[in-house]
Length: 349
Image (cartoon, rainbow, N blue to C red; front, side):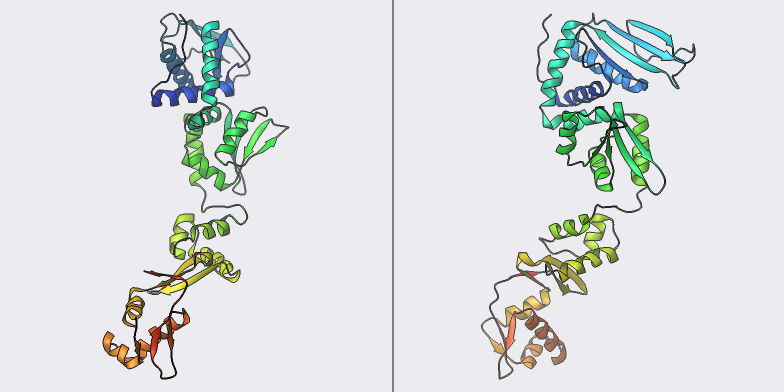
């Protein structure tokens, strides 16, 4: 039977991509006459077995499972497999399993499929899930240390995937592992559920991730991110919610950006709205907007404007002074107010 590459339903493609990640992490990629996968988590062995059995749809598949344990205790195998063999390994802290499918034809097809899937960026998250399930680990320690590692020899494909997700990493030559730190990198793992395929690693990852008391960002990350967000009017409260930082800390950074002449803030209804200077905008309240509309093509004294809005002269004068500071109105020598042209866009909140 000649095996043909074909397009599978997307959900099944994702499962196969995860199996490819598992195989790249813990399979024998050099062997040409069999497909092998080694792991100590029975759930992953079953997952890999079920996916490949469905992939090949061949009732004559020659699958073998080798189980290594430090005792003679038998493992419960939740699937029917042709051959199951037990071996004693005194060094094994827990049983580990080697899944084998002996077939040159199936091996060739599998490797062709692997190369095809490695070219499809839409499957990178699934492949990385498999790689992390196979060779990833989560380390937590003192001083709020949280580290993700992928134990692999340097690999251009792994680096390509990490770069695709903008995950920053270093490579430890001594331990032969990719080292990933920083809350912003953990965020990317969380957003894409990259640690979720292995049941124990999933639990450990989310416990560690939720233990971050507040976001820890690389140098200038918050400052750069706030500036990027301020293409529209936002309050410190809006930004503190988004970045899980205190309003005090966000206000501190916004004030720094203002000192650098990069942002403006406008007081509207007892709230400060911030926006980038290069957006060339002025933010005003609906009430101030009504003052501007009323002054269109008119010149009026303060008391006349106060009478129209049914407020006292002092209240009206304060609003007009605020509009004057914004460069939207002016007062002539006869103390009459009038609207003036401004090259900035007015935003009414």
